[in-house]
Image: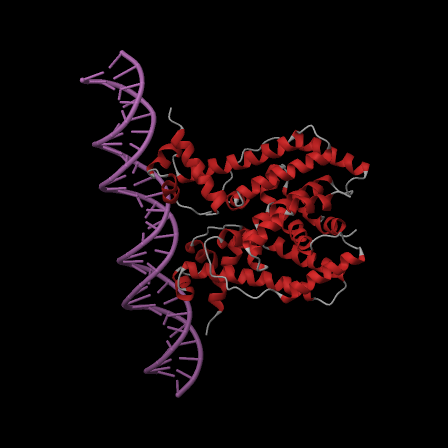
Length: 191
Length: 191
DNA sequence: CCAGTGTTTAACAATTTTGTCAAACGCCAA
DNA sequence: TTGGCGTTTGACAAAATTGTTAAACACTGG
């Protein structure tokens, strides 16, 4: 019942994919980084693809539950948004390549179980609509409101490496830039 | 001087990477899709990596020039933004995985030539600042304004496959959703 | 027509990556 | 201590991917 190694391998893989951004790492690279024999990947996960599948599914699931949790919090609307931004930014800065990995993998694989439409999400969309009635945020399809929020949060971090070059920014400058995002987003969203 | 085949191969590669989203396509897959012998990839490009490098560089360059062109247009601010949104949306819908490809490749390679900071970009940032003075858009660091715009444009398309699953949306529904983005973004940006 | 030049192909070789298996190891319980 | 069981390892095999070469081909200019 020694799950430590299995977990170590999986965590190492996630670190390589999500943090270092080495999106086509080989099993050898993962094993080396974890300090174990490559055979163990097959022993515990069967094959490279199955390891990827597991990592992928857990990443999607963690994203989903993270979103769920944030949306279900018993807080006033604005605070809820603020907390969500903080949580999301922290996560996306820790694992800047997580969403990129999901995108590169989603095209190939088709193993995501189709779950029922999220109840918390529906409730939160209503909450957004109510807030529009109150006039604290702009009127639009609540779905667009949510997507705007996600976009402004994720995109600058995901595309950091690209825009740093496109705009010729230094790393420290870009770091500072990301730090400012929370306030910018709040100002952009609330009237 | 028969450049047709070389071009065919390169275009096919771009189609596979940027449109189909097969971000780790093999040389064989590319050759098959182009209907040519795999050896030609080596004949024209030397190696797989050099082909990737060329595709990558051209993608970055096209993005840069597309941006440049839009920013340099002699148009009133709002129309300039509108046109930019249209051009960008058309591009990003035609090649939804282009930016994802750039992100997955940028980490490995280091072959991008470092160009001087874009003059048009600087001019446009001033233009944005002037517009804030006029009060037609919200006050913030012009860089953030630009990033907000990029984010709201790109992210929903890039992450389409993911959020379609996360939110359990049908394809046609998501298509319609993207269609609405232009108006939503304009409403979100202009006061 | 013919030589020459650039293009394309098939067969082969090399490399890289993944998968398998039997044996060795370590640890706990009988 | 020893037998058993899950874990780990190294050596090997298989598969997949990329790179190379010589020859066939096609076309053009002389």
